[in-house]
Length: 426
Image (spheres, rainbow, N blue to C red):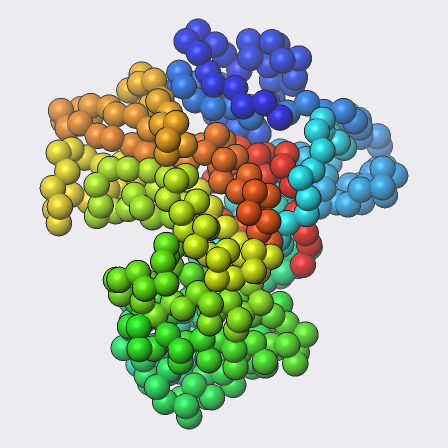
């Protein structure tokens, strides 16, 4: 894999020709539109096939996988254009293997709302170990607030991906409520009832486990939260399932702030089987313009996390999006717009702006002037920033990573992941 930064005058065809690769595969792997428009400074993932197969009449994806001693999931990951479908046609060229070896096998999770476009979901599933529909919450009486997950678990199972029940402290309005989590954590009878309901839903939907995400907990509830996760873990283990929990991005044990205080890394590390460190949202909707996940900040959190929790229990949170801030920034007034990486590149193309890259944050950014004269600054994720984050999995010896979230297309992110690691099935 080579990450190519587009220069003035270059086209998909000229770049593909210079590397000796198929221009159509280069385009689809990077989510470039059919017209082939590029921005100066845009990053493209270039991959080099070593084994290819031209589909013959009567062959199926399963028969081709069997003939080459690979899995259908591998064929899907090596051929993003299949979009998780088994539909192939005579004369179609499939990549069986790419140049370069894997850094190892990892577990990868990804969050999705039930409203996700099904073609987008199906394309992403082969790159995941676990799909996590977002989210089951809590009622005002501390009971399980059900989520209509529609066909998401079935879609995941069809592509060798497990599904997890995501249990959060969210309300019907989609807001985290520490009042509702406090109710559960301070009343043992309510906690047991909630655990009964979660267990029943896991059985009903055949979830592979539960991912718990109670946020904004006060420090005095840290021990009760860890005890709740441990109790849930006991139930899941008895069923042959597991429990995971999400961690606020702390850098020290006594870090102040409601987001951090109730998350006791050591206690939760002992209680859960896996823990996702939410290493994103430094740049956020109401904050000043900056990278969503600056690499030094991410590493600072990981340095602390591995001092409290075995690295093999940790998953690295990986963002798939960016923000567009109107300027000047005014605290409490300015609101950034969330956008996909592809939408960010489209803005740069539209306004003929060269994309810059911050070497310290390891993140792309640019500024543009809209039609109304407002200056905007955009920070987002691309193949370069994603590669730097995914390499931390090997550097720190982590179990894998988790993508927040799948609602925005990010094909070149999957290409980078597939170039670096093998993804475990469920």
